[in-house]
Amino acid sequence: MLFSYHAASGNIALCLGDGRVQFWHYLTDSALLQAPLPSHTIAHERIKAAQKQAQYIQASLEKVDGNLRYRVTREKELKSSISELDTKRTHFWHVICIIISY
Image (cartoon, rainbow, N blue to C red):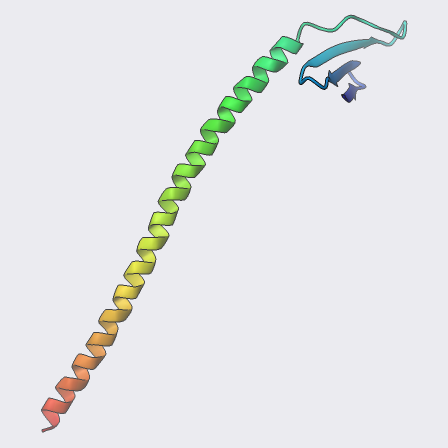
């Protein structure tokens, strides 16, 4: 069980072992606890909405990650191709210089 107390509002939140959340309000004048506030249902709805949003964000990140990996792979291929062409060009110019020198 987890316990959280907000001194300014007098609200107490209890997270129970089965995943339920209960909200209580502390009455400062009489030092009594009121019955659980009905907002625990709202908390569950907010949690579900947050989980849905987190799933959407996760899917978006996976898509971006896949695109980024493709671009990095493509960049490596292009760099390798440029290096190969540069080597061939250098060899070609050596051959031309040898031919011209004869």
